[in-house]
Image (cartoon, rainbow, N blue to C red; front, side):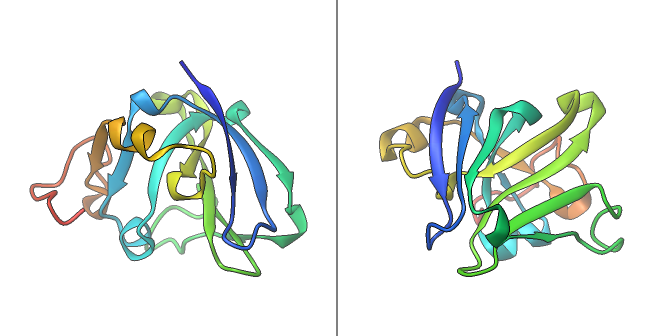
Length: 140
């Protein structure tokens, strides 16, 4: 059952609410974006995220075609502190359309116990196989 969490970037300029069911898992991916940022995400439907402050501080990073088809994913980060708070993408089959990938490290009121109890889902994004874990997961 989703619970409403409140989150923010490191400096607090960007604030948001997100309805997340942590029992559905926290995803750890080995793609270059997630790996280089230490991004751990919870996937939620489009209507589950609401920005409550900081639209003007939000910057949109879109990977080059080498890393992802252009326009398919938007990674939002704070232009002041650099924290990546969430990403928005589109997956018809898997998510029924637009979805958010919320960086669980930016959830201000998720307890350590809640985060520790969430199952971990590994994605082999390095090989564009988000539906399967990589052969080695211990480093993630």
